[in-house]
Length: 490
Image 1: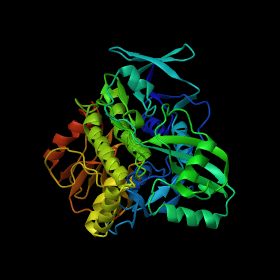
Image 2: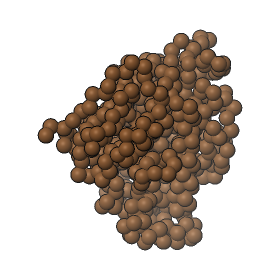
Image 3: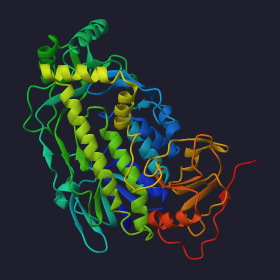
Image 4: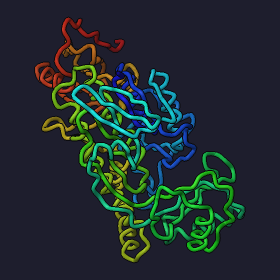
């Protein structure tokens, strides 16, 4: 029996596998596809996901294969520059094709010892008091203490658990694919600019993933397909391009073709016993704002350390359930945001007027910061009760006397950043690091960070600290030596 089976080897499942391995949890990833997909539906990391990669020491890998961006139609296609004072040391997104994200995360997970099995389709799942049995299409069974469904919007795991998935079905559909075009690039650019004055669900973006002559094509479909799992044909793309733009641009040689709708649904529960859901298995929504991949990666970032603590038998009561408590409202907020964004992308007079109004509102710095912070998730605050204004927020990377804060979070452990030098995490040294250092950017004596970088406590009282440590990190370990504090050079 292994510790955890992760069903699905996309960004969410691979991020979760790496997080679990950092905590020493045995993990097997089961991916239905025999080979990595070349489709890059998700095309970037927002600022919070950039922070996540930095917290785990992965940012350099992504920067080497990505371009930074600070502008884009993140909300309803409204093109505005990012605000100047976004609360992050990484005020940018990364244009990273999903295939690259998956390759980098898979390499990281494998380096840490995760076992990734491709061509493994899950068809059955049962659980009992001791573990979970996963049945595969080849007739074999695997046994684990826990399982997590990261297997997408048509999640087999969610269906086998019979979890409700309420929401709205698709009412509009959009075609998406990568293909070549024989029309002159200047003509394509001119036509796209003109059409997008009224139709924002349209575009031909050149040189996709650095491949000259390859276009990312997006165009409204003619209605909603009865079977959305069936990809569109090239002729369907040509027909819709002619209907919307008056020309099909001579598109040919498609690399991949797909369709997506504006269906919006969320799982009623993210946990049933020893089985949990993350990523698109837990929520689906239109891709407006590019939030889907990021939401899934951040689900995994919240879940990994909690599930690891449960596996190791040191999770305090309610810790694993806090995954649903914290992430379900976040998913609901993204669903609401994408509903609003899709309304703004409409072509009727009401949608056009609303988009013009929002465009003027976003010229105000505070409005722009609020919307950008919401979509990039840097404004996220979990409800951890009353306390310091930092409580529940993720702490942005701050400069210390000995490096940067995020450099001390690579191993997915708790961290006490102590500017007083008087505090102690004795008894929890096997799971919480104690860093005695100071930062001109942090106006609080000390902060206790969870492994996901969110503030679990802020203050200067050892008594208060001792009241919060068990809440997130369990009881003290027997015979644990005093923690070694890491102090700056004076």
